[in-house]
Amino acid sequence: MGDTPHSSEGGLIPVASYARTSQDTPQRDARGVRHQHRINERTAREHGCVVVATYTDNARNATKEDRDRPAFDHLLADLHRGHAFTAGPLRGVVAVADDRLYRRPEDFILFMAALTSAPGRVYVGRDGLRDPYTKAGLLDGAGSLQGAVAEGRMRSRRVQDWHWSRAMDGLPHSGPRPFGWLEDRQTLHPVESELVRKAIEYRIAGGSMGEVAREWAALGVTGTRGGRPNPQTVTQIITAPRVCGFRANRGELLIDPHTERPLVGAWQAIVTPEQWTAVCATFSAGSLYMHRGPLSPRLTDRKAGPKYLASGFLRCGAELAGGGECDQLMGGGKSASRKSPYNYMCVSGRGCGRCAISGPLVEEAIERLLFPGEGQGRVRLPEPIRLRWQSGEMGFEEKRKVIASVFTHLVIKPGRKGCGTWDYSRVVPVWKWADRIMTAETAA
Image (cartoon, rainbow, N blue to C red; front, side, top):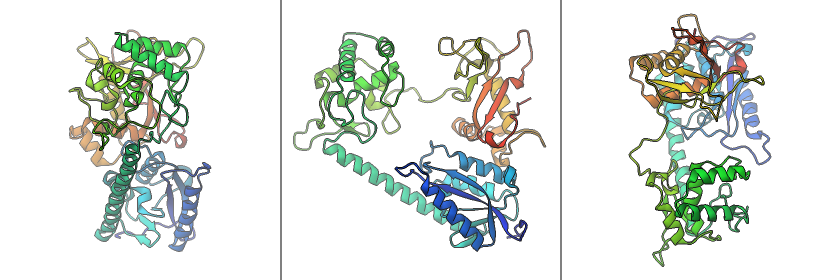
């Protein structure tokens, strides 16, 4: 390395210990991550380092891009800052294995950028100190990444094959019990199955899914994970092939190789195959159970996902009559105003309906928070990210990932009547590392 790593008192290099497990133990005692931190402390001492801060992602998957890892995000932010708040300066990272830190190329790039954002940093592994600034150090890390990616693909294929084999045996899904069946996933639930049967008959007769959802909600019905019924979930329940006994896997009906007919599962059916076919015919293809979800094709031309950059991140900050804040998610929608072609609004009925804000104002405020002026703000993202964002090179989805990595959400305060200028202080961030920041800073 070009620079000698800075040492703490006693000549030891202060490092961060990172630990991660994909699954917790059955006892939910976080035993795996505790063992990793213990090994990290020993490894650090053996190589002239001392652990001054710990970062833990328990039961967090690092292979799938839609899985959050808050502690990993905190670690990257602290490495860019060079300081772990109460723990003091950071000069490196120790982990029991590279794949605890990264299993995807994107995470490897983010980690190396954060680790080498200042000179004199070290990476401590079971084999000793690694120089992250040299070609050899990068090749070591890239080799570990290649192995992790290959292992992830192999493991994913094994899991897919296991599910397919179970499906070919006619066994039910291994996840949470489906609505309409008891915990054994084979015996009909006496109440839920009757609700599903009536909903299918009602829909075939021309009924509305909104009406079914409202009726279920009035009866106090909840999903098997505790969610409230809505038209989309009811649609998926009644169009799932399991309601007529058919078995599907990864968005496709399975065919019995002996009869060349749809494979019948080992559970009690709610309706006949003819009724299932009839109810599916009442929906557009994109609404059907068989064409929804991350592993199934969507047969509509409409792109799924959010339309506006801040969708899903904004919460209404209007005060309620009884005290407290509304705290409902705000949705985006078109506006007739030339200055603001779209707004984010708190919808009446779901929320208080008393708060709205210009879409471009919100997005400009978010940009100010992500990339504050020199010596201002609470976050310092890598310079390449700022350049790509502000030059227009960064795409919509990547921008949303950057926002999600920094903010838990943003609170929108109500505007003032007659105010003709944009008030950026209405956008109040709730940082992902709020437990380490004493005061939240607005975009003003």
